[in-house]
Length: 299
Length: 244
Image (cartoon, rainbow over all chains, first blue to last red; front, top):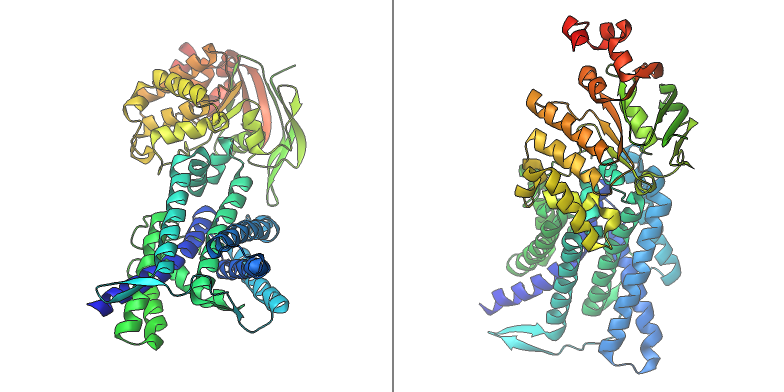
């Protein structure tokens, strides 16, 4: 029982990171039908921006939580802006080109980000400061760290914020509308290019938040960290139904749980086999995912 | 000076020249019909006017401004509404959300937005009954009402309507044409693209005939309806059409 609970807690923690990254995949796919292969690397850049801010604040004697808050906000803003610039420079000129061109451009953006960070920070690992120590409490024999609770709640808050934005504001409604029909959205007076850029900003900022939390939680970051995590988050988005925002949230948590339970009950070495077997299974059996109704097209 | 002045418009799809020099005018308060067979370029003309397609040559002036190169969302803001072919309502959003998008440019004036929404509901009471329903679940006629209502949210100076009667039962076609006349009574000029040329010319003041990307005829609607060439090509040449 205590082992089960422990896996549950660990799975929800990592699952909330996946969910935040999966949201970016799903929002961008929903709006321009692009699997943004650079999105995992956006997560990685977020982790590095956060690390840089924390390193700069190390001498400031700011309380740990305040420093982390600053790192989160700066990383979200800077990485969001980076995502927006990549969209404007690399994707927007290709929106009317064949899908393959923009897909290859996304791969190029991914390589550029990975190698750019490697050149700047080196190929080794950077270590996040131990801000939150290991303090926690125990429930029925499972060890729960305060960081796990905090990060899980923060992830939920970010997801709830995004959901409310998309469903309760005019700009969010415009976002959903242009995912359905771009030309019709233009005829409503929606600045489609602007809303697409905003979508990249939001998706990238959420990934950056996940990156900073990941760095703080696991402490080790590396320029390649976005590759595998990005693929897992993509799996989460597909599982939930790509293009579907609540689907990405649920898919992320499910993939995190799947990973934690297969690590715990089977073996850590098998977890990726199992996660990606799920990806294949979903694509074969129910390509629209758990929540998706929209048919996956043009890919 | 006309409200809308289109001069020598050329639009290409790839290397295919869809419009080969289209010129037309719409004055304030007018209903102007643009008729022609499938593939003549009627939809392309509207899409180029409203900025969804780029003209390679020619100019479009609206309310005294050159809008040839303006992006679609700015053209809407100037008061040129466009109800596209096939209605293109947002099927996954509710009726009310569709109308709110029609009033997207009023998003910072919620009171005005609500007022406009209520006006649309007054014209189309059916939409009011279904305001929280997903637009995709509406019948064809209701979807057309929603598409028109959505475009009326900004009270445009000119409304371009692309095939509003397409796929509708005859009774609904009459309703829609009645609504078009009502829209004009409220002071909005209408540029009406129709395959149903007889109906269109009956409510229009003037008309243009488009053939393979060129305007081949233009005249008062009644004269066009009586023109033997138009009757042979677009009105089926029925005797009763002349008698009406």
